[in-house]
Length: 76
Picture 1 (cartoon, one colour):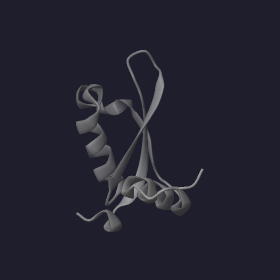
Picture 2 (cartoon, helix red, strand yellow):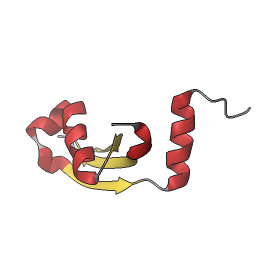
Picture 3 (cartoon, helix red, strand yellow):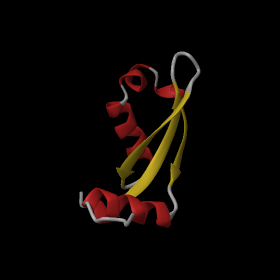
Picture 4 (cartoon, helix red, strand yellow):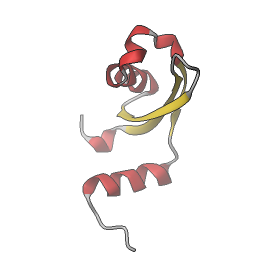
């Protein structure tokens, strides 16, 4: 799916040592973002209940992430 049709999500989870971690995913909805996080983080495959939240990022962060991914210089 084209990146322009997806949103930028932050998926929060914890590991076996109760460390809080986050991963960012581009997805069409929060459910898809969590499914992708399970694929990207091996421990979440075995422990999907370790996911604590999934938040859609504000448009400003989403636009900045797209610019960075495109390799557009952001200034110095």
